[in-house]
Image 1 (cartoon, protein in one colour):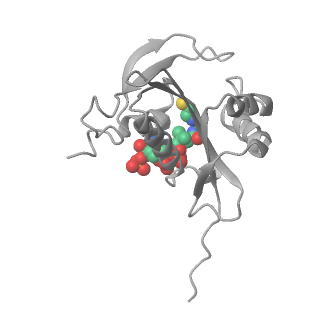
Image 2 (tube, helix red, strand yellow):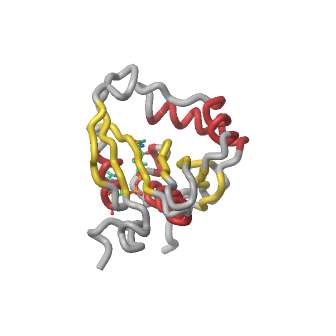
Length: 176
Ligand SMILES: CC(C)(COP(=O)(O)OP(=O)(O)OC[C@H]1O[C@@H](n2cnc3c(N)ncnc32)[C@H](O)[C@@H]1OP(=O)(O)O)[C@@H](O)C(=O)NCCC(=O)NCCS
């Protein structure tokens, strides 16, 4: 019996997101965030032009199946990072792509020894679990943060690598 062929998202490749991916990112946003002002291609291009650190996840055929972006501000010893977005196409979810993207962003933050913040809908169980597993903790609530849905957001924080003894990249559940 021959084994079934591997699906094209089975072994995604991570690489810096390309400006040419902006239109596809906007399509994926529309699928993932229909109620919360999905970003346009222009918004993605503006993010890339701002110097923010964006990664894309590509399937074995080179198609974009996810993206994630991080902005870092500050100066040596006081860097702060913010996760701006992370999304994985519905078909590719639940296969480790989101975690791989987040780990890529966090490695970048750790290279700057940056504390990392993000906002997440309070009802987004999957994303909250992903972030908690990566060492984020809830530090605040922003009411009606998302528009036009009016959904609330948690603010989550992950300590800088030096603050957590250099083991910030995985949550305490995963470290010994
Ligand atoms: C959140 C998101 C990026 C996760 O990406 P993913 O590729 O599906 O996640 P992974 O397969 O890498 O899973 C990583 C962790 O996320 C959590 N997770 C993922 N899917 C989950 C689900 N359906 N329910 C609960 N936890 C889930 C788990 O903690 C999982 O770790 P585990 O496999 O050890 O249990 C993806 O679901 C997505 O794009 N959602 C829509 C967009 C979105 O909400 N983005 C975040 C905005 S703040």
